[in-house]
Image (cartoon, rainbow, N blue to C red):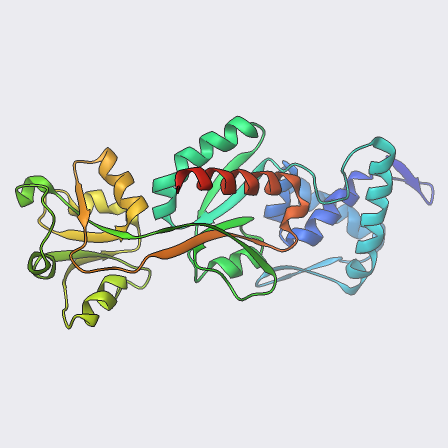
Length: 304
């Protein structure tokens, strides 16, 4: 507690202000600071009184700083840095350890690598909770820039100059089916593949990479059902003669825990690259930086 104009002022309010400026969301600020949203709201009310300004206005996209908030933001950060230097801490540099790091990814990556990532990060960073949030290459840039997620694992890279990217590996495709219904685990022939009904996994639910590959050969497939979630496949394929084509990492993970079989596709599919992305300023936070480094190093081992 400090005194400003003979009135008590809690310096912790400046930390709340700084985090609100970075997150532009009371909910995400509460997550990072490990407090309730009500506590953040109460702190903001006290800040507004102290500075005699709203500081943040509500918009459809979250909070927007007022001109006054923009002006004092650098002064607040400098003040926090000065205090941190006297204490020998990293406060004010953006490197405080949040209790949560949010990783955006589609569920094929979550199915294949989620448990191993949780284990690796829990061992190295026991104070950090890794939260998985569903995203894809179409949604990740907006989510990163809005700070809804801290890191994202997606296929391909992004052209947005605010986003940094690191390659993690590549994958191909495998066909998945129920061997009990089909009468064995032998690889599908081209004719079987085309004539058998397919479960389509696609964000749009209308078409996917399999349709593009078959079109190159002048062929079309029959669609039994469509889903946006790879994790639903065991329930949609089991006890049917349907087939699904999905990234090899997810196909192998699903086959290990289910009674489904996998085989190479009878038509050649292109490999695709995937990687880890983050907003340019996210690595100021040492927890996000540490999680990023663990993900990169583990994927180097898992995708050899």
